[in-house]
Image 1: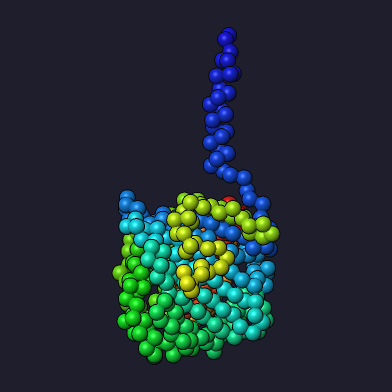
Image 2: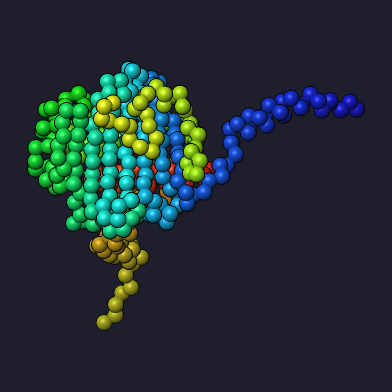
Length: 262
Length: 90
């Protein structure tokens, strides 16, 4: 009886092994009590047509107890639309002050250099994300909310007063292009079931500025890649440096991009 | 006077009527039919198909609250998604 030559199977087996290894990368070794950088790349599609690419980057702590003590968090979403528009969005939380928290949320038209900054400040007791969360959960807590653009500064008002005041009307009248920018992101991303949660940032603006409703789209958002690693003590490697570079000075990490004089 | 035993149909009808009349006891935030945003995504993954899908549903529930909560929700969603990714849920 002639036995098959085993060397005929070596190469196919090697190819299979390599493919399996690429499909199942080794489990990352992560200290969940220390901050991580989590990068994710998404594509937004309308049927077969690609609408946008999103690179999401977050700085946060995975472990719940450790997260309660964390002094800062940071989210960045870089969105490149198929029509050439580029939007950089940020939301950062600063919980270092024992008596107050500060959330700063920014949307930038990276092609034109126009931006709108939302600041939310509130009193709290104790340091860390946990104390800010506990404060916000209280029904009697109201934060102070303010807006700023290159041309406009709306001084902070209590949240409850915004719906009764004229801040939304003033902003929509004075900054129609920024309104359109916010609305564009809201129109092109689904309001539910979106794993990128990119729409969350313009929705924060919409909530306080009372922007008009937008029609719901039937676009689908799919995650293509991710990279997760501790960002301390050494900075983690970005998932896509080339994509970040397309946004130039409007792509920054762990801090908002410089606004004044930029 | 003798009492007749109620029929099985009548007994079950009575049970259903009692259940329907009992006020529902809230067990969690009823969002999209029962997802509890205070539970981790992993604990509900078997119900919504995947760890990541649960995280997204819970985020959508939490972000329905006012503006500043969306930032908190983004951080907690990110943490849950990171947990899903590191534990290889998908």
